[in-house]
Image (cartoon, rainbow, N blue to C red):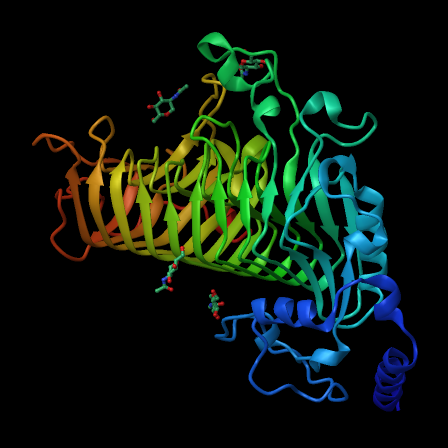
Length: 474
Ligand SMILES: *[C@@H]1O[C@H](CO)[C@@H](O)[C@H](O)[C@H]1NC(C)=O
Ligand SMILES: *[C@@H]1O[C@H](CO)[C@@H](O)[C@H](O)[C@H]1NC(C)=O
Ligand SMILES: *[C@@H]1O[C@H](CO)[C@@H](O)[C@H](O)[C@H]1NC(C)=O
Ligand SMILES: *[C@@H]1O[C@H](CO)[C@@H](O)[C@H](O)[C@H]1NC(C)=O
């Protein structure tokens, strides 16, 4: 009964699209231009009839494009909502927020619709929350440039300084295009309250800066093909999301820009981050508490602070992170390679993490576990910690910056790391002949092959005492 109602509804909606001129009213594109857009998002070879609402396969299904992995509309049933038709100016200075909001409202209410920010224009958008739920098959197509107000002084007062564009309660959306998201972060990075502005670690801070793009409480998301640069803070943040696929992004900010993580995920599961390039002033990818089933593949990272799990357990909080794979990637000219960092105190665990086939080029700390993470330099040792276990490092080769040891496995006093597995490690100094010794502290595990340098500091077996109650929290 319910199903047939849905069929009727879908049928009625597609009829509507024939009899009303929604397209004519809402966008000024000719069919020609429109087909050009479609070709960019690569439709599958044979269109599925619009009347067959096939459930979308899980996004992890091997599939190169968003449209191909979901029920595809017939081209004629895709509606394009061009922000220009809603009054956007696109001169880089005029406020185009209202046009985007109206285009969003229209697109959100329409199945298989495209909100289009067209090529050749720069759209200035004030901090905005794009709220769902929306109809299925929504595409946020950025072919032009979008940018925020220029710096903290232009930021609207009474608006959060922590986020610029937020996508909230969206189920199923693709953000894509050949365009640019320019975060115009420079004036934020130079605020006197930023940590690097103070002398000897002192500054007026802390101070907020906006995340460029935040997805919050959303699912079945795809972000692909965009160039994103110079965010005031994180470029992307996904929190409390599910089924996230990120592909072919290029994220660029200066190495000196503070906290400009490329992609941060938190309380988010079933994530794939593939085929992307990040160079910035903080982690290329950072994985916070509550993430599981995450696969990261073919990332070129650096200069940066590497790919990180953490920091976890701050202010004695619980953190659970598991089933994370980072594979087939390159990390270059970075402060860290693959890192797990936790604060003293806290509880929970990080487990089942695989770092595989990663090439390091002049990286300080290519392999690092730091359970003494501390920003203020006066953190005290505590009796609890996030438990780290079942971490495997395979086929990690390349060069390290000799200022730090190639492996640094510093586990907490109270909760040793267990089952750290090393194989096919080959890390040579980037300059000179001096080979620094690996560092281990309370690190248990095994080397399965000969490693360069030899890692003799791992303790064998499993740690004598692991407080089971701490481990069972996840
Ligand atoms: C890896 O990602 C780059 C883009 O950063 C892409 O050009 C290349 O084709 C990808 N390689 C594979 C094997 O997918
Ligand atoms: C681990 O995550 C992958 C996705 O990255 C998923 O396919 C797999 O089923 C997960 N494994 C477990 C044991 O949950
Ligand atoms: C660390 O130092 C900061 C400021 O210097 C201070 O506010 C904080 O209370 C100190 N923390 C501890 C644990 O001593
Ligand atoms: C914390 O413990 C580590 C390892 O035992 C030690 O090196 C460090 O000095 C300790 N820090 C403090 C503040 O006690």
